Each structure stands twice: as structure tokens, then as C-alpha cells.
Amino acid sequence: MKLLEKDFAPNQRGTVKIIAEEPDDVWLLYNLITIGDVVTAETTRKVHLESTKNTSSRVKLALHLKVTCRDFQKDSSTLRVHGRNLEPNQHVAAGSFHTLTLERNKPFHLEKKKWSPQAVETLAEVTDDSSFSSSDANLLVVVLQQHQAEIHLLGKQVTTRCSKIEASSSSHSHKKSSSSSSNMFFREVFVAFMKHVDFNIVKCVVIAGDSDSNTSISPTIFRRFLLSEAKRLKIKCIEENKSRIVVVGSRCNNDKGNCDFDLKEVLSDVTVMKLIKNNELGLEIRTFKELWDMICNNSDRVCYGARHVESAHEMNAIETLLISDDLYRNEDTEMRKKYVSLVKSVKESGGKALVYSSMHVSAPQLAQLTGVAAILRFPLPSLQDMDEDDDHAWI
Image (tube, rainbow, N blue to C red; front, side, top):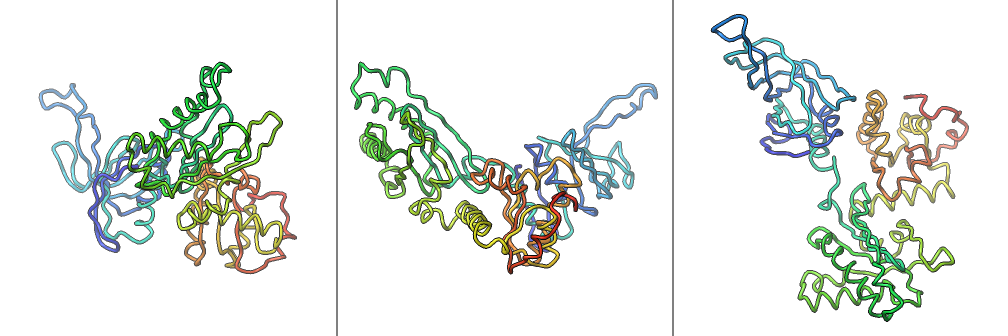
């Protein structure tokens, strides 16, 4: 979602110009636009020419509708806004009722008499959190294995693999020395690394690999190569930020010498956690780890499953709500409304709510817990006795 223009202040009248880019953006607009708002957008209408009643053509015009209702069309990812036209033009009279269809890549203006704190928060979500790009990432992880490397960008809610580098057959040929072949491989990784790293955004770079490996492919050796190349090529951004490039070792999990790295293991490393502790990614990882530890050691202070979580909320017991993006932005409109309402209600009750993208490093474990869980303010052993046959019965 792009915010093209902005002219408003909280609790005052104001206008924004927005363009939806992704299907999910349209749903977020459905939550932003309310009855009484004014939506202005270009559309086409079929009109009769003055020269003859039997001839008509379609003309482009702008409508200024005071919203009376709106309908979200999930199949086409469009939003139909119905309302009364406020400004007359050559073809449309003032006061007549019309419909505008808001869809992707179609800009429009939205005016509110009063931008409430809730509307401001929704606008921030629409324009900042609706999609992930490298500009959202504050951690870059390089995962090294014997004949391949992966580069991951991690940020708020999302983990994405942005590059996979396979060692060319020539780079690990037996005819070449071990040092020469590893250097060829490292140069390929170096090129990919430079394409994705931006130290104005990325707060930390983690190089993960088998530190105990006897081969020349190890995170420590690659870090040394990285700094050496940066010095040779006079790449100041790396030289000036070398303290933010750290090495994390991991164990090989098979007999062939190839390491199967778990990003959760990398991110739980003490050094890494210290580096990301003050950003959103660190908060999300720490919160999920706290939830998981409580499930194992203090189960009365946590709950999961829709019925249990809703019951805990009714008792104002939720300290932190964890919910998967698959539920929070569910394709079923009614289910989606329920979970959006739950998140909003938890925040209004003084609790916190974290939405975990399906690409988040903790997403698979949260999915095992039905996609919704909560850390409680106080123990609720009575929840353990509830019927769990239908976790989504309340939905």
C-alpha cells in the first residue's frame, strides 16, 4: 500500500491519497473507511450524447461520495463503496446515489471529519505493514554450508530467503586447491551479500555455519574474506560496521558433513539476541520463546486455541496475544472480522498483540498451537478443563 498524500492530524479533519497494491490492502481499506467518510475517485459512466438520444458513450469523471455503506468482495479483492454524490458535474447531479469500486492500482482520496486514534493506527498498518520488502528488514543472516549458501532477511513479522548461492562445479573441482575453490565460492556469496545489505537499515549481520568444520568453508573464514574484500575494494560501509557482523556456530545434523541450520537456533544465540533485543523482531522472538517455555513449565499461565483464548479474554486475563497472519487476515470475511476485533479488544484492555506472518521464523510452531495463543496475567487452571473438541466454536 502506498500513501501518496497526507494532510491530517489526529482528532481533526483531514485527507489522504492512497493506492492499493496487494489484494490484502483492499481488506485493510475496508477497515479504514467508515460510514460518513468522503471517498473521491475517478470512474467511468455511460452517458447519452446531446446530439441524439440513441447514441451513448463512456466518459471518465470524478465522484465525491459520502459513504453510506461498503462491501468487501473477497473473490475479486475489491471494495464497493456506496454513497451520495456531494459535488455536481456535467453528468452526475449532487445528491444522487452512486457506487465506486476500489481496487488495486487505482488511487483515491479519503476524507474524514475526525481522524480517530483507531483510524490513525489502521492507516499506519495499511501503509507500513501490509507488505514486506528489504526496507523492513533489520537483520541479515548468511547461512553457509559445504556447497551452498543462503541469505535471509528478517524483519517485523517476516522472514524471507532472498538469495541462494550454489557453488559452481568448477569452484569445488578436485583439480583446484581447497583455498582457491573456497575463494571462488566466497566471491559469489560476497556479490549476493552486497546486493542485499544496507547498513542504514540492517542493524546486524549474522554469518552462520559449522565452526567446527575442518574444511575451508566456515563462518569465521568467510567473515575474514568479507572484511578483506571490503578493504581491497574500499567498501567503507562494511569496514565501518564490522563490529555488527558476527559469527554464530552450529552443529552438523547429518553424516555427510552438510549442516542443517535452524534459524530459530541461530536467533536464540546469546550474541544475536543482544543485538536485536531492542527491535520488533527481537520482541517477537522473545515473546514466542517465553510462551513456549511456559507451556512446558508453567502451563496455567498460557492458553491456546480460539475457545481458550476467548475465555481468557472475557476474564481480562490476556497480557500478550500471539496470532498468526493466516487467522488475522483470513479469507473468510466473518472469521477475519472476529480475529481483528479480538486483537483490537485485547489492546483496548491494556494487553499487547503480536501478529506473526506465515513467513516468520516462529510461524510453524505457532501453527501447531492452532495459530492463536496468549500469555496470561495470572494463572487460569480452569481453562485446562474446557472442551477442546472445537477450537473455533466461538467463531
